[in-house]
Length: 212
Length: 162
Image: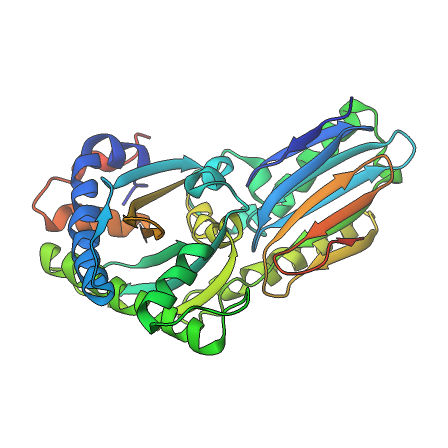
């Protein structure tokens, strides 16, 4: 098999990939708004094909402080799934869920674990929706959480893509509630998984190879 | 007026004093800063991966890898008038952002990047005179070829100068 061209994937199937973001995040939003008992909205998903230099521009700059819950994705589709939320939003989210104001600047162990669990539940909802839509088996690994600069966090998926080419392709959906929560779902399948996802929807994948 | 030039991921830049170089939100990548103390020419490369020879696929960006990135950086610095024999190196980055222990080797990549950079610099006889590497947090680094100072800033930590 030749090399899959990321550019071709985005050119031809951009709308399909957006729809995948839509279905996944839509489901996740329902789960989140049930948890928060308030309305949570999402923006139209973005399918981004980025040069590595531009990765930092994705979420308000490289130095934007984010809490990130990361899942390894395995099964028919492999790659990563990230639930990223601005640190202040994360704080707001936790206090809403736990019913008390957070104290101090850093997260306590319990707050961190609550946030991880929120990430777990809503990302599970995203991946379940994706799995039933595509009929593919998708297994996620236990979540891991970190709080750091967006650029540093995104270097992890960027490096994975760096092994295969010079660009990063991801499906990003931003969500927000009426005031204070601002965050993102980022699905980052590896290149072969993009082909599987597209194929599973009955679309032709022959045209996706790089011309040699 | 001096400028601070931004170096992105898989990117490299060369400046001379009084300009400086910055790379923001450095994670598992490594920012290698080289300096010629005589001409005060400084360069920085933000490498993502250790070895360009170990991978399939199409790679057109030398700055992505430790081996090709450092070589290209030295070439560009020499073109500006730096001497390779005078160069010294400082390293930052190579953090392990997540300790995922699945089948893939994400968890290891920061360490491998640091090791690769050190090995290559040793082969080139460029001494590594300071570093702020590994650990588990992201960094923003600014390099000043005038003094050779390398400022390392991380979330919730004091600024360190190496």
